[in-house]
Length: 481
Image (cartoon, rainbow, N blue to C red; front, side):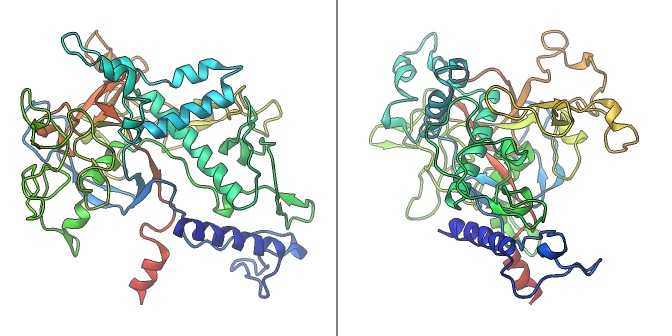
């Protein structure tokens, strides 16, 4: 209800401005001209109150923390050296993406592209064969885990890094489409086929010609109506995989251990204490996460199962951490955005740390004005060329995956099967899983997997940036008072 209310305030504010119903015009403090006044050209300024919280998300208030090892380095990889960093506020999925969510995605792909582009649907299918093992009978999971209703709200697995990114992009479009329908801008269009589907980038680029119910009135005297723009603050930013820094910060949940900027208790896991069992009297002794306690012990003894899950568990299981996030320790490990390098903790910036930048821009048409779309209705992007960056100091090319670790185009340090098992396709995996020992549930633990491969123990969740105030305007006003 709160999200819908915030959204309606935003759209109502925009409509009031467009309709020119405001009695007193706001003026520019640099020119003195009225804003939102069609008599003097119609430059529009939208009063913005708050970012709407997208479906499934929880606000993670940013801050500084010590990123890296919180447990002893048993593997002696030394790839998670502690380092103090700052993470901007962002939103994170409350739970891992579940089978039912991924099935909704597959259904949409089949409905929209299945007739003419069946390869789009096939490309998105999880690899259910990840459940097979040479010396174990897991064959029922191959057939049942993804589609049987008993597993609807279990975390989806068998999804590789590339597929997880595609899901996040699809989710962005479906959420923004629903917002525009909710606010009376678009009509529901269940008959979308092929390129006739809503795409956020295409809409903002003026390339979407779907079922429009009511465009906004344009105060520009040269035009009558217009589409919703980024400046209106109605559309949400992209859903995407969290960066390693975001995921680790969210998993640590130190907001519950902080008093006046002082972290009073350091954690090993996403919960307080140094153990893996609940110490609250009501639930004393129960496991705080889903993991493998020891060799041959996935869930304990009949009559008193220690974590009540032989494989993964439903995404809303166990106690959430202090940010309200479920299963940040245990259940399934999770893909994050970063390309893996052992020394990334030493190399990366100390603000919004991330390795994997490849800077892109929209591909324009022959006239250099509007963005080009592909056959699926999606805006086409290209890497930024070096000639476009002449005179820049912050970057000079597009691909910075190898920044600070050997910037040569053909990096000899990271040649898979040659000098290392790591290359630019290796992405960081965070968190423990139902198949792991407790060590991997430490937020600072890190490992990697190839982006095109999938397993029965890796899932994912999405994140979204927070725009504007890190904590919200209302909270800022209270502080000033």
